[in-house]
Image (tube, rainbow, N blue to C red):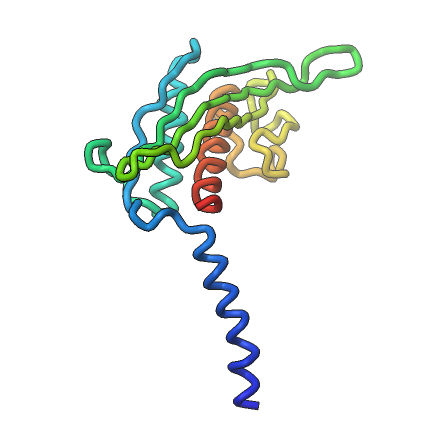
Length: 183
């Protein structure tokens, strides 16, 4: 039995090593700079919201050290190209019941050491809100987590501001996921 156990475990261990290596960031990249995203829209404060969420996600995950641009091995540059705040669902009488606030951002992850673009892609994120003025009782899943109103402990505050926050968080999470799984 003792001789059989290593034989069974070894293929599993080798498979895990391959999987973790396939999704790793280039070994020479140890740090990242995330400058303030450029805003090509008329939406005030959106650059700060998106950039802050990006910085927070990278800090939470601790996959790369956050540094200034002049010290970075890589730079994550974002450009907010579109903000859409539009009706999304209606009643049968065509009254709006839900709005979607959507942020669209062009992003480029640049390898400073090798002077090349590692990732260039467009990302979108959205948050939902109603006109009730109180997202804790609007019967909308404002952050897309499957929970509504009293079931969802983080649904509170100004509806549009909350939708903006959710949209920015979704973009940051998608970018982080892409970097962690593509490299």
